Every structure is written in C-alpha cells, then in structure tokens.
Length: 518
Image (tube, rainbow, N blue to C red; front, side, top):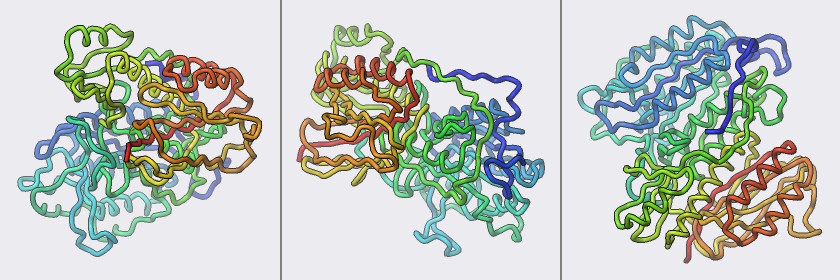
C-alpha cells in the first residue's frame, strides 16, 4: 500500500484541537478532543459483520496519532450497553467546556416504531450492541431518542459532539447485487423488541442541536454495504472519516478542517469508494466550526499502483485461464468471493466490483486482463482524490440509466482553474471530454459552476467521469488523453495523470455511473 506515511513529531499534541464555541477558526483559544469508538462484528443474535472492527481500529488509531486527549475503543463483546454508556459518561466527566467529543459507531442498525411522535416517518432508529437478540436480549441497543439524552449530558455541560454512525436502518440497494457479497449493516427484527430501561435520568432529554454534528452512512431508504477497501472489508463512511481526521479534508490547505470541508470531503470520498451506491447524510449546525486545526501529519507519497488486486473466479474457467490471471503482476486469486475485490463469472463473462455491481459483460481472457487494469487505475484515482477532493453532483440519481436517459454532472466551483475531463470505463477504454477545442473555456471562469449534460448512448456498462482542476494547463496529460481517446490503455492514462499532478496543486472529482440498453 502506497497511500501515505505519518510524520509524528513534537507537534503531536497540537493537532486535532478545536476552537471554543465563542471563538472563530483563527481564534487563540483551543480545547481537547475525546473519542469513544465502537465497532462490532461478532454479534450473538443477529448476522455477523466483517468490517466494523476494522473501521473502529482505523478511526481510533488515527485519532490517537493526531493527538486526541483520550480515545476509548470498545469492540465486539466489550461493546455492551452498560459499558458504552459508562464510557460516554466518563468521557463527559473527564472533558471540559468547549471540548469536542467524538462518538463513532460501526455496526448494525434497525428501524422500529416511534413511540413519542417525534419522527416524521413514524420510525425510530436504533444501534445494535454485541449481545442484542430479538427475544433473549432486546435491551442491548441504543434507540435514537435515548441517544439524544446521552448527547445532552455533553451539550448541557458545554461540550461539542461529533456523532458518526456507520450503520443503516432500512432500505434497499440502488442497483442489483451480483451473487454473494459482504453483509449490509441493516437487520430486520423478527419481532417487536422490548424497549430497554433508560440509562439517563429524565431531566436530560433535549439535545442542544447547535452543538451536535452528526453523520449517517447513507440515505434513510438505502442500505450500507460492507466493501473491500485496501484489501480489507470496511465501511466507506468510517474509511473516509479516518482520512478526514488525518488532514486530507483540509481542502484549502490553511491548516484547519472546517465542518463544511469535513462534510464535502467525507461525502465525496464515500461515494468514490462505494461507486456512488452510498450517499452519507449530515447535520452540520455550524459550517465554520473547526473540527481539526494544526499541522497536517500526512506526507503524500507517490502511488506506484503496486497494491495487490484479489479476484475470485467462479467455477467454469479452466486451469490455463486461472493461471493466466494469477500470473499478472500484483494479482491474486481469492478462494472466497467475500475476500475478493473483484468477482468474475466465466460462464457469462460478467465482472463485479467491490460493491458487487456488474461493471462489465461478455469478457474473454484478454478483456478481463484489461478490466483488471482498469480497476487498478480506478483505485489509484480514488487515492489521488483523497489528497485533493473536488465535490461533484450527478443527476438524476444513482440507478442504472437506460439508453436515451438525460444525465448531467455539475462541479459547483472550479476557481478559475484549468479543467481536464475524461471518462474511464470498467473495460478500460479512455474517452477525452474536455477541452476539445478553442471554444472550450481554458481556464474555466472564476467562481462559475461547470456542468456537462449528455444522453445515454452505447457502449453500456460502468463508467467513471473524472474532472481534474489544476493551476496550469496539464499539456502533456491532455496530449496523452487525445492519443488514448477510444483506446483501452488505463495504465498509460494513470502514468500520465500522476506525472501531471506531481508538478502542481490539483483538485479532482470522480463520479461513477451505470448505463444499459433500453
């Protein structure tokens, strides 16, 4: 893995400090960060997960590395209702007014009927703890109403709170699932579970919303899939949040991650890693609030594209076919689908990605080899985007769009930079989209949004639109794109792009989209 290295030095304690509620990002007052991180794979009464503990370990490690005052991590059977509450209560007591308290949960969520009429959809959301069981142990969960009471303990004491829930409560996937996949973080109870006894006294019932920043993993009507990221099952939200706290969310490079920058970075990178199948939700009461200040501890290192890609080939391929794929550089055959980043069905020629969308069809051996290189190129683009995220909006939605459908992309602000836009398909073909001639604005107008609209036409499948904004025109990259237009050479594309961005500041937007015939 060539994603980043850390430079932890004497500045360690100066990082992840937040400004008090009465100051501005440039103020001198600062306060500590405390964190409670919960991750549960080993459930006793509901289906087990694979990536929640990885999420917890990553987030906790990053918070410790960047100087949080204290971090409590509870995983699997440690994460009982009483222990989680006592850890939260102890963190509130140990902190001071103006401090930021981070509560990060990765695990299963459920919906249940609202009992007090405060939910417009008539449903409460709950987070399941390790020993939860519908009938034997229904109290091992945290209902959102009670969570508000827990958070009120902090807000009434003058603390700020960042709550991150890498779980889902209802819904269905936006696109069909290709065979066996990693689990989703949603469970449907077999019966109406009995409500637990509250752990907070009745007077702590009204959370001070202007002091609580919250992040949910996806839309209320969508599921949260566990996906393979850097060869591990993960939640895309937790992965993006960890990278944000490392300093990658400092989008303007001023040494401070404002809440607005945190939201923009996390939203876009979750969508990048989940192939636009997941859109996180935010409640940000103060966009100017500095969640992180201090020197960035991330040293960007070149991405050599050497990460191993694990692919599972289903039954039906002969030994020569398998050996040919296994012989590729940095490619490994996976025995189980659940441990693979890609899954190939030799009977249909279909290839599925890490969220188990079918991204290519009718592939032969040569086509599969190129598609693997395209996936490697996409992973490099995802890592590049961590270091210079540029948000992008897509319409009409994230479904599979039929031939003739009108689709559109908008980048809200490109700041007068030089835009270079291309499309990379899952089969490896490269398509140069902007600029194509003297009529294309170069650099693009300061402060104006850039929009690109089109109608779905063949070929169909999975595409990734890439918008690169640079301070100077990347002349060599554009020449390469012109030469590669319509060709299946993803590796050459990535080599040229990495050379271009190594020479100057950049921002980059990625948007996955899926098309089909009528």
